[in-house]
Image (spheres, rainbow, N blue to C red):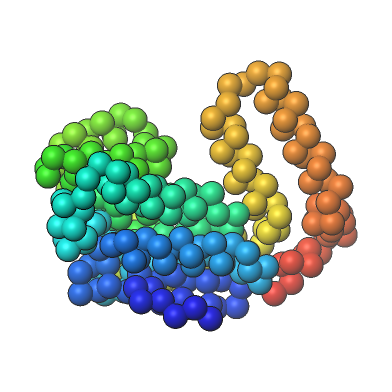
Length: 266
């Protein structure tokens, strides 16, 4: 198993938890953590024994955005170095967003700037009541560029315009209201709620999850035309004749759990 400097990797049955482990800086990320997140996600995606991934933070916060020491280093970069540095973050977010396994953000404490990007790039977000959110970039003369596609998709353009421009801090209740997070619970109940979400996820087939995520991304980016209609028909036809699809249909007709769900959490 890979030894990470900024992460802890925990495997529980068929679920992996990636713990961001820089609690002394509220899990603010630097180039090392960005690289390690990309590496961990790629490795877990290729592991057939893992069916879902949880992203969480040790200590008092989920992720407070960019590390100050890293930002000081970036301040001395030229345009080309800054591009390469930003591309590393953009690539990591894309790796998280396009991961074939379902991903769940376990959010507590602060989720600021890039931390909000991590939440938005996950499929499902569960937050503690006391969690606090902020798109703070404009206050230091920057823009929420690499996280923008995921944040706007998660909360919608209208809410994103307000919070990207004002850099206001907002509560978990507001994050829930605008659709940025799916569930808000007392801090003591957050792990129970995450486990409840995982119980639902592990009832689904792994191939079906991967294909569903790909389907969502395609539909979101495509006009509703004959090409998309044909594409969706092709996708369901392919799944119906797959081993997983055939087993799922047989199990449904025989009123039993499919093979992949025999040891699920519920």
